[in-house]
Image (cartoon, rainbow, N blue to C red):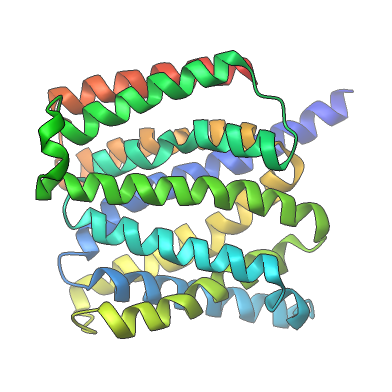
Length: 292
């Protein structure tokens, strides 16, 4: 029993580290978007991360082309690419703080999808938490003014929220995929490469510029290496051993680091409505966490 508990703590630590890395990404993306097109930025990030991961699996003799072309990987890659397109475009119209909060409200959606797709237990407490969390999303997105939903400054909030919903499906479907695939490194590599592949046509069709000024290079390097290659691998290792709902709860460290880095790097201090919405989101987190 002590050995099992120690092993469980290791997986929890891996998920928390991944969440912290992803939390730092919002402010870094916001900085990069000052000089790089949002779609091209996402493509560069995943192209770099995919190249590094491919080198690793090839060097270890673990590259499996069948995994790369399997239907689950194609679905996961498409969903992930679309989610990043929405997030990056949304971040051109909203703050890193709002994005960190809105994306991570998907914990309730994860719980519902996990109950349906993975037969994980869902309780009334989880449903109550989801309702309160959605109320928090409303405060963050509209500032308490429902008419603001159609305001251009709020469209960015809706886009990043949509990205979070897509990632909720991604988490649950990835959990189901990891049940069937034994090599987590190859699965992680395949999804990163596949995401880059789907971002190629999106970038070709909708990107306004393919410029990468030197000032934006460090943001691509940080996101590609730390927030893509390393974070995806750590998260998938933890997800393989834990419930999808539990992994989503642990990822709620992400908005904490998101707000922290937004303050440190961007001097983005949360507004009163964002703080109120954030309190509701945290309340929903507590409710859902206790139900798991």
